[in-house]
Figure: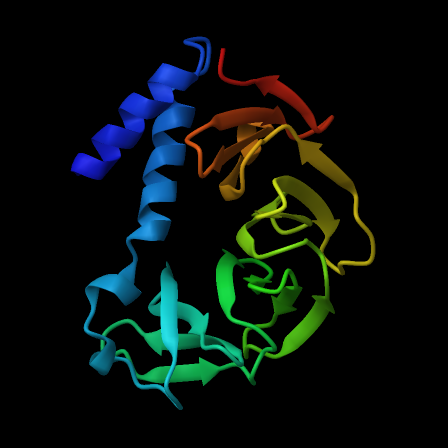
Length: 218
């Protein structure tokens, strides 16, 4: 809770008061939750794993926990039963540690951002549907779906937010204004708003339709 209040205070120092409070609060809560996930709070020994892996995070989906991470030589995404934490499904080895995931419920897809800048789309059985190597320079720290799974945003160490179709066939646009690596990006679909935050504490607000910056720190 202390961390949330610190982030909230930081955001209000850097964002103009015209931004609706609900956007700021929603973004801070989601960003904080992504950094303080099941994988950090649950003893690692309770996770049934196929080999020695470091879990960098987890998200809930329906009655499941989706954990992700890897090690120096591979990446992994696993679906666990939320009650028993037994593995329901597991990916084949991915070429690099998984740094971020996003889940789209209908149709079900998992977007995966990796340490090496690669971007993947996985199906419900965690099979690879699409992949794009070198989507970013450096690690992809955040991914999110927009328009009910019709497009995807990714962001990371290269300080750029990129928009993609679900088949990852071509880049649809870029958002550039951050001066430091981007830690989080989320979409507020009903308001056509994109929020992003970097490791320097700056939060920016973008128009999802024209991909232009609306507000940034004064």
